[in-house]
Length: 49
Image 1: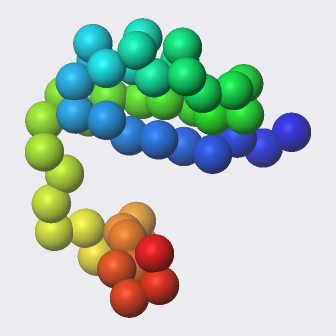
Image 2: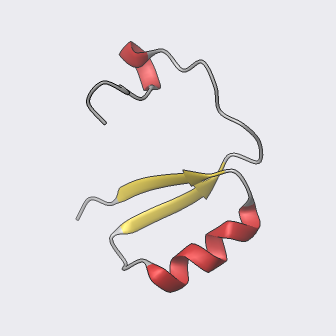
């Protein structure tokens, strides 16, 4: 079964989110900001999402 990935900035937020979300989510921490990700490789398409 595939899981949806959620990336949060702080590792402390992972524990809180796991209380609210079901098992179908993988939550990871970036331990900082994520910026300038190219859409073709690993980015977010803000026009669609």
